[in-house]
Amino acid sequence: MTPPGHRPPPQKETPVQHFTVVPYEPDTSPGLPAHLKAPERWHTVDRSAHAPHIVAVPGDGARWTAAALVSARPGTAYLKIVDAVGDVPAAVEAVVAHAREQGLAQVKWEGWTVSREEAVAAGFTPLRSPLAPPEDAAGPTTGYVRWLHGGAVPEPPYYGQSTHFTCGAVTALVAQVHAGALPLDALDRRAELTLWRDATNFLACEPVGLGVAVRRAWHSTPVTVHLDVDHPVLLDHLPEADREWRALLQRESRTQAARTGVPVDAHRLSTDDVRAALGRSEHVLLLLSLAAMQGFDVPHWVLCHGVVPGAVVIDDPWAGTEKGDTWVDAHLLPVPDASLDAMASVSAEGFRGAVTIGRAPYE
Image (cartoon, rainbow, N blue to C red; front, side, top):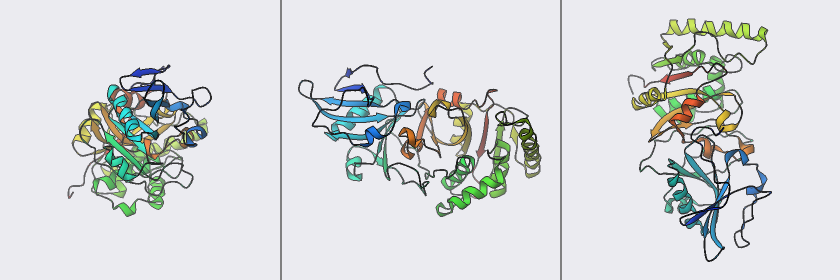
């Protein structure tokens, strides 16, 4: 089934006004014309999970004058240019037109071969370079974004989680830097692991424990936990013996929430609620499944920090580099409301968990 909000490329070459869209499959797709040489990276990563396709600009006859390799996470509202070859400005404008036809919110551009000056001339804004990316992360050092709705979303710093289990801590730290409650130079691996250690349910961070840890770290910051079930969560995959002691820790987190004044709201948080919180200048740490965007059903924390027409803008501290997915995909990522609503139903029981973080009174 096609995930909500995902628009796969056509399955055959389809001329659309002044550009052509061709699905990209390295082993079977027609190659680029000889005068348009594709970078080696087009062939070294299996991008098939993210609907790769070529957007080409036709010239005389069947000859292309330009082409771009484009991909995007399923269930999202953007396109990403990996590279453009030939008449690069024409290729980029073709991608932008392609994105506009689909009603998408933005186009991104990985900075492998494009300079800052070239990107700006094409209407793109440079993204802030990621902070302390994991040593094994594969991605460009620069990236660019072009919003298609006429505005822009304030940009938080991008920090990629350095472990498989610290996403909750990273989203909280990025939220606090973005809110001005934490200096940028304090966002590092020591802070990541310290906050995770206080929040963890071994190894995951469940919503109540994460909310309590945020309150402990920033005493004056308003924090609310949203969890629409009244029993321990994120335990289904564990043996019975391991569930028992983790459940005990989660019950203790509930006790600590009551002692420290962190409310636990049992109301099921909707996308409208997320938008309302962001409208109040709050940040929302949202627990979702990666099944739609990455193809595996793993609970994962992301930061909701902005809105555009039809989509909520998130930052995801994890990128699937083996699929050609980089920090450029994960940063300032617009997700349609319906997609986000579907992703936020976690585990077989479909519970919803989140932590909203407000601004401290002095901010």
